[in-house]
Structure formats: C-alpha cells, structure tokens
Length: 186
Image 1 (spheres, rainbow, N blue to C red):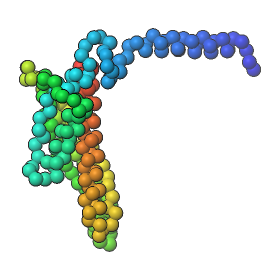
Image 2 (cartoon, rainbow, N blue to C red; image 1 turned 60 degrees about the horizontal axis):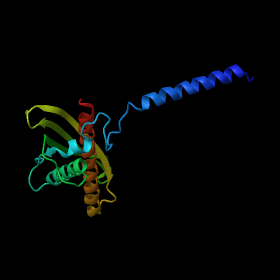
Image 3 (cartoon, rainbow, N blue to C red; image 1 turned 90 degrees about the horizontal axis):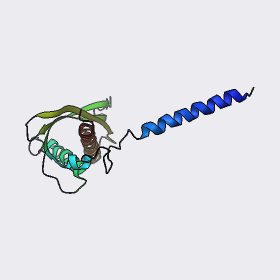
Image 4 (spheres, one colour; image 1 turned 45 degrees about the horizontal axis):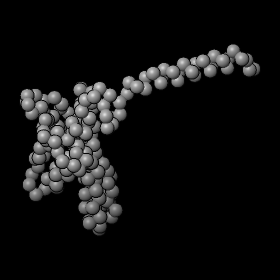
C-alpha cells in the first residue's frame, strides 16, 4: 500500500545520499590527471624522472630478450615515448622465469599446455640520499597451448607470445606500484 510518508522519506534519503556524494567528490584526484589538487608535480613528470637500470640476464638467452622487453615497456609507460627527465630516482629490477607442463599427453609424454611465469623483484632508490623508498615483488603466470606435437614452430610462437604477455603484466604491475608511491607517498 502506498503512503506519502514512505515516498517522502525515500526521497529525503536519496537526496541526502546525493549530497554526501557531491561533497566527497572533491576529495578524489585522478591518478593520471594533468593537474594535481595540491599544486604538486603530476605523476607523469615524477615517473619520467625515474632511471630504469638494465635488468641483468644471461647473455644470448630468452631471459635476456625478456629483460630488454620489460625495461622497454616500463620506460614507455613512464615517459609515454617522450624524453626522460633528469633522474631523481633509480629503479633496479631482477627477474626469474619458470616453465611448467600443466597437461601432458599420456600416450606421447609431451606437454599439451604449459605455464610460463616471471617473478620480478624491484627497488626504487632516491638518488640524492641513496635511500630505498619502495621495494616489492610481482609475478605473472600465463598459460599457452601447444597445438600439435609435430608443430614445433607453433609451440615456439606460443611460448614467445606467453613471454611477451607475462612481461607486459610485470611492467604494468611495477608502474602501478610506483604510481601509488608517487601519489600517496606510501
């Protein structure tokens, strides 16, 4: 049964909720915005001032190619393809890779699906003080299938695609963590 009191109270509650939402809307700042609320430097400028060191990996291996791919992805994420600013922070990354067979054909003993993983450990250091301000570890696990036991090039291409996908995830995770540090300071 409809009553004017219940619809009026719903209207008041709705208006109160909208008023609270409007008041708190000014408290938030877009992470990748062009201007900051407090007048500080924007995130893009802070990320462009990070010197990303070469990631060490054994010469002539797939890990060396992945190390370059991760570093290039991070540099592009930090600068947007533009010039780097004079460095204020230094980022050091080390990585390890794994490959595991998930499903094995019981007749041939060859894998049908494999899991490829990268684990990266990173630290961000202030250049002026030498103080480590951020440390962390991130990982990425991706699965790829092997379309046929006689198609070795398809297997290699699947592995290469899995490596590239995992490298992109690592770069995105590191960028997100450092963006959080530069905006929130923690």
